[in-house]
Amino acid sequence: MQSHLAIVPAYNEADSIGRVVDELRLRAPEFDVLVIDDGSTDATAERADAAGAQVLRHPFNLGIGGAVQSGYLFALERDYDTAVQVDGDGQHNPACVHELLRHLRNHPELDMVTGSRFLAADGDGYRSSAPRRMGIRIFASILSKVVGQPVTDPTSGLRMTGRRGIELFARDYPHDYPEVEAVLLMHHHRLTSVEIPVVMRERLSGVSSINSTRSIYYMIKVLLAVVVGLCRARPVVEPGDLAPVTAEHGL
Image (spheres, rainbow, N blue to C red):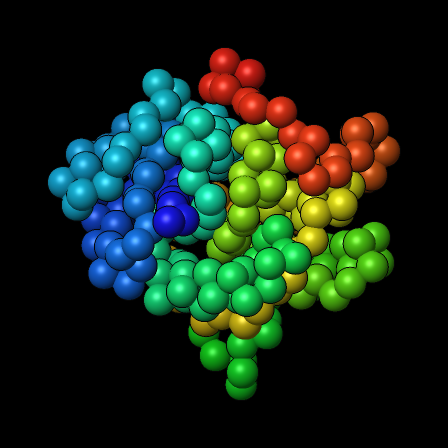
């Protein structure tokens, strides 16, 4: 029987994390839920634990990439077959998890399925602020050309991977603004991915760290990361080539 893990990175999400865990357990009961408390200073860990999640606590904040990689290391070491990333702020609807899993099962050639808010019919759901949408379109255009297939939502953190994706991301995962670079990682390692439509929500609580005044800074930094990623030498990974990775190698 296959095993599935929901990786939920969270930093000071005490007001939303309980509901996220509750929804995952209700909507995707076959998924174990792991909350990575990334050095929170509030009650995030306690509320996640009270809701029934496993909790991995970082002693200090590593950032979203470090938190997600910890989740993939956990999945690798415990032999999970599938892992899905779900944000701790409630923006990702756990009801979409089954759609991602169904697509991954129906297309065994795929290594990753990403939920795209921009493929949703009739423009349903939350699509972020105008400055961020402009940046997303720029990243999408660049990545589509690089990987040779349409990419519409490169900043989406709602992603599901099979075993090869777990192995790759446990070994190598971008740490700053990782979503865009993760698309490049998949391409460099000749792993296959696709987007499917999902409807996203506004965050349940708190505010995004990338506000309107930081959008230009964010765009420049991610574009530089993309350039560096394109120039970075990486071995080509064929099926079965990824050796076991343990926590001592990853972080």
